[in-house]
Length: 100
Image (tube, rainbow, N blue to C red; front, side, top):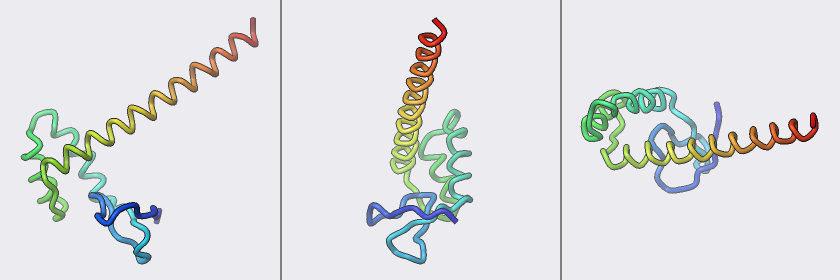
């Protein structure tokens, strides 16, 4: 199982403390439920989705905590996608220069 170095006192939603207290491990049930929750946010409020997520995973999460998770992951993914697009553009520019 993948272990991640612990960065804070609070263990984030979707993870649990490892045998070594300096590391955390992903909890697949919670991570899958979080992905499903993103879809529900198209039609439901953060409060409703947080309530559903708490019932499904039996781990409490607030609507503000859910919003922070969704926003932080979106920003991270958006940043990673921008980096990937920049890399692809650089590669295509190099290919164009090489073929010219």
